Image (cartoon, rainbow, N blue to C red; front, side, top):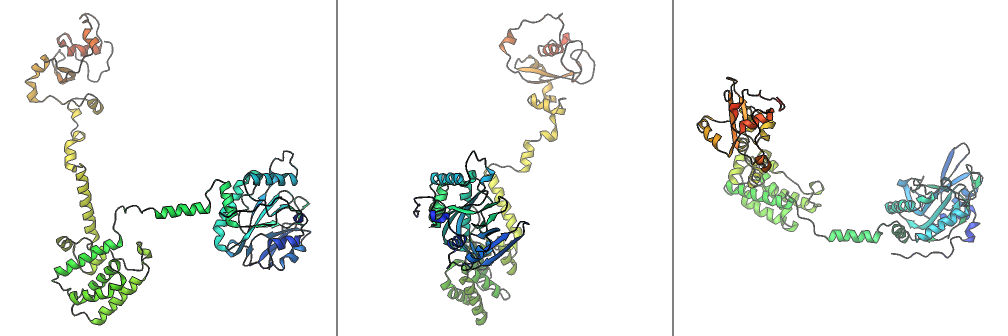
Length: 516
């Protein structure tokens, strides 16, 4: 990082009484490159701006002392515009202190001292020129001229500098390079005050060192630190490719497919396909072998695989392939000068069917339909390896939604799942129903009315499931007398305890439990 030299005093007495012409000469030296824009705005807000050479700009500025006159701090190739920047000449702040609460701070000396204190705290140099513009301050840091190519870096430093001094009323809109500032000695018609130079060092600073100081004060990395991060990231090994083949790998496979086709054709390409086959082979070689061996390799393959092809045609194919190989190479087809053929394009040009591609085991030369089929098969195998089942097997295992077994036991779907998916009693199970009634491990959990008489035990079907464990307190509960009034819930308990004979009526299906 370049070191900055700070002046011993923030205000140079010689600058405080500087004339307008000397101010322009300090801002834009005589030997500067580019043009300066000077303009004025009258009381009717009518603006007039003209461009001047640095040699004539001081005299033009002197004739505008009785008006609101402005000058560009940077230089341009013609009228001021970001697209016509000739040299970047300064960093600057437009401090609208009139928008802030003054708290007894005098203008302009009090605000100038506050700015100097804030700069000292941020370890930044004092401005080269400090102007009292009538209602605010204009702080200008002259820098060694920068070319247009440094505009992005200049803009970044400008925005960071403005962020540092937002508390002093820094205008965030004052960050563009065509910005104009008031000329000292002219009149601010809004404030009815004369613009004057109240201080500054008169020095020019190195942009790189000044910008690093700005970034450090803002807690941002300097340019050297950013370059170190970029270098570290570039030295880091690239992550492995996640799927897909590189152009070199893909064309190596296409070359193998072309050789398999040549073997299928008996070692000689049939007429009608010789030219295109040799062209495709040469295209593959542009991706897989060095440029110097390309011509020799193509001629060798042509003598062996395409006998009878004219020498002039072979030479033309060789020259075209070598020209393509000399162009820029990239993994992106849009940026690569070499040809990039799809597998379907090669199959179409050589009339290769999908059946022939499967028979020969071609790995790249086949249609998009065959590609989709192979992809689907690969995905199917992958799913089977991780335990996926076919649709038929899944439906066989999960047939409850279609068969609706809850209807057979007279329940709703939610109740059936809540009861543990009970199944209806089949004919074979009716013979052993008496055994279930005597078995304490089986509990009668459902009575379904099936018609018939209303007498106890008639017209009711019992659906059984394994006995759930009984709470110890319930097992110790003394039996209630039969003459006691029973709720419907007690009626269900009687059914479970084998006392259905004492019940004279079956409750209606779906009735809510309650008092009889």
